[in-house]
Amino acid sequence: MSNELMALMAALAERRGWRSPQAELGRYALVLDLNLELSLFQVDRLLYLEGWIAALPGSGPAREELLRRLLRLHLARIRDHGEVLTLADAEPNGADGAEPADPAGDARQLMLYWCLDVTTLDLPAFEEALGSFASALDFWVRAAAQAPAPAGPPPGARMLFP
Image 1 (tube, rainbow, N blue to C red):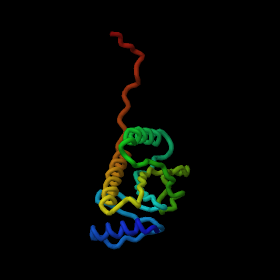
Image 2: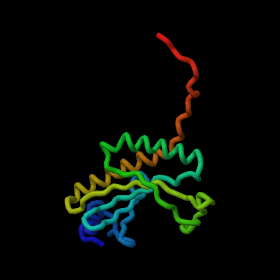
Image 3: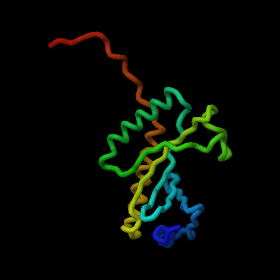
Image 4: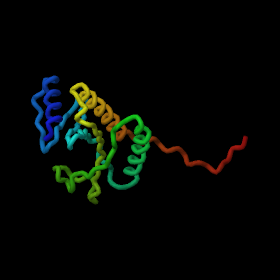
């Protein structure tokens, strides 16, 4: 476990009046006010923030529609936002105690990542980064949960002339 992340987490806990945080397997887990779960870990100088967005539907049209819709949103946001939308394998065959989401074994989940240089962070910057990441995670959780917009009628063979 890195000293920078340990120091930031200890300072954050002290400021917020939390119990001293304990890392499990090199990761800190936080549940924020919005009931968003995220984890933090450090590799060398890089601090990674990671959040779970949603489990993907089984293979088929629903999965493809969700991925296309979220990809369009991600492309629209990528210039102004630093988060990265990714796919990750779910626990195989319900290894996490839950039933597998996809009996064919193609269970995937949407995750959100954000990477920062931990050596440039003081406590206020760390808190701001956590708040920004939580806002982005909330955006993506809500976006993934939205029903897709109904498709309009297919374009007709009519042509309009001026």
